[in-house]
Length: 276
Ligand code: HPA
Image 1 (cartoon, protein in one colour):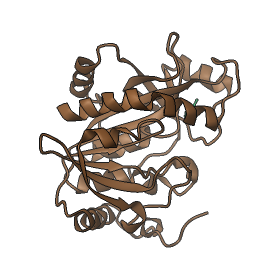
Image 2: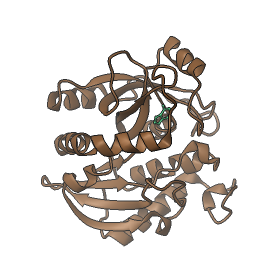
Image 3: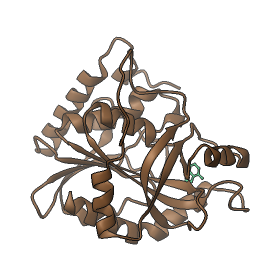
Image 4: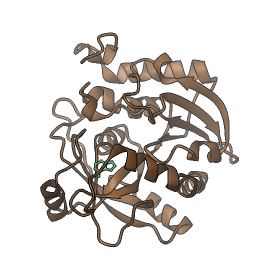
């Protein structure tokens, strides 16, 4: 399963040095020395990149140290450098490596560490996810207020004790709500995947305080906090979680819900980025 050509898989490698190498690749390939904000685009959020500002460079992620090939159609494997109207540089990561791909957590968080190494102080993480909370509807964006990491894994190596209080910045959530006061928020539970949850797992997630279920984001947020970044998390509710919706879940349904919601949520995200 492992792609031996990826230097992150060498246990003697230093993931932070490789992130610095990746940031140097990005600077060379985009011609932009430093970025201010990084944005990871999940299902349904892709159009935001077009609305944020002027794309000054698009590069295939495979040209950048440590990036893996995308596992799925619909997960675009590219990095874009965007210049906003206010002169800020945004690194858009359209090349997420998911934990369920089985390549290890170093590869999952490499994009976040690379973003930090490019200079980005703000990390915006987006995803498509299942909704648990009563009243939520597919197509609705929600803010992530906190997470429960159910992967049993961590991007932190060794005795690295990191505080995760207010992991998802209160300041940035307030800023997002000033732009859209109807935004609700919830606790994101990261499951390993790639299977969707069972109804019993969704009931468990609800019982322990979760309101969103998905397969990304929590591990990335931990790495972003370790790197000292301020974090904003958004989920697009693409479906109600298993057992809450009575029909079976399908990847097709998730992609379709993302496609339908994309114009509205992308415009919202672009406005939020404009205010960061
Ligand atoms: N569960 C986990 N991941 C998801 C879901 C879900 O219901 N929908 C979209 N991604």
